[in-house]
Length: 365
Image 1 (cartoon, helix red, strand yellow):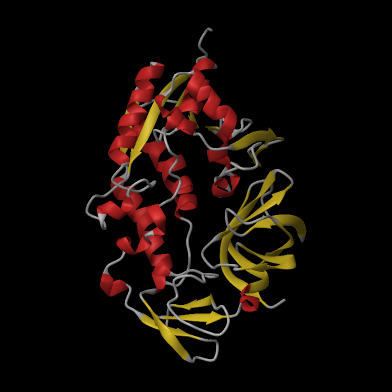
Image 2 (image 1 turned 90 degrees about the vertical axis):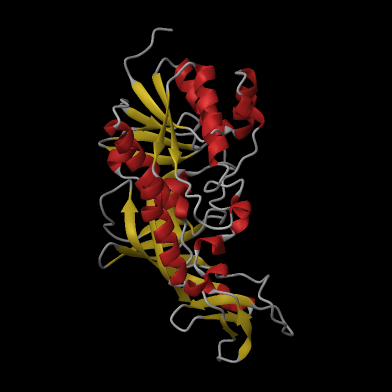
């Protein structure tokens, strides 16, 4: 096949998804350049507890695997050092949010500011030339009129549009998702047929293995404190607010005649507030840092479905404009564990309307 004069830089993790995405681009005749990010700082945390994760000491093996994939495909490979940028943009944000009693999603921040922005800019600065950027995400981009729109991947079990809602029109306009119309099963079969060593590599999509976030904090930053009920009665002690999230039941170390859940993280008083399951439900949420993809702004209330975390089943809701770059989300039915710091993402069918950061939940049924 005659190669097009279109060059694509593809982010490679060493895993099966990005490997197949790169191979498909090569088959389609693009000039492909492999790119891997170096983000791990070995001075952080207990190394043994961080293995097999996006951020961890296994990064060296991942980069080597990505390099081998590029050799197999006959394309150039470049490793871009973003260690300092990742620390400042993702890790510091993550720590600050947890210390404020919120539960952030580092993958969304990384996608917008690191993978789809600084990786590209730093590669260009190093004279690595390409016109488009691609990844192995399961999502789709289409042009509708003058706008680029983001859609769910066709495999409902692997759709990753939730993590991509914060991308700008400029970022979407230069991005390719070769796996958007494929299932994971098909991708595995393609990897085997293409002879890719990544075909049998285990996936590691967690930010940190086992959610072991405590390794990112100094002990002085996260002192133990009280676990109390809604009336302020002392029930026990927690080991640091960063180890807890809204809706958590296990690992509280307290006994009660009925199950208790984390319903509030009070960073100012360094305490965890627990209560019965009924107190976890919210009728809505205030969302800030709104990024809309299909429009410039909300002209009025909009009926949507909403995900308040990645594994959340979409809930029917009304999206209402609010002052500033914010919106109110009112659920048709109360939703469980609406968590400040997490992202709420809005959909019209398979179309991503946009999303934002949950500032607070609107309590009550």
